[in-house]
Length: 55
Image (cartoon, rainbow, N blue to C red; front, side, top):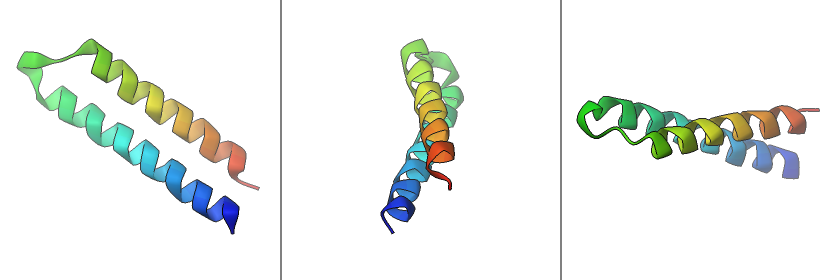
């Protein structure tokens, strides 16, 4: 049960990273490289943690 909740939280983190990445890409005039880096790092870390929790 705990693993299921943790996996849900990690998937939400990955989705948040994807959404923030595409929102930042859509704002072409004011694209922040820091925000892009943070969203990519969030997606990578969330995906790696999710894959580790899969039994």
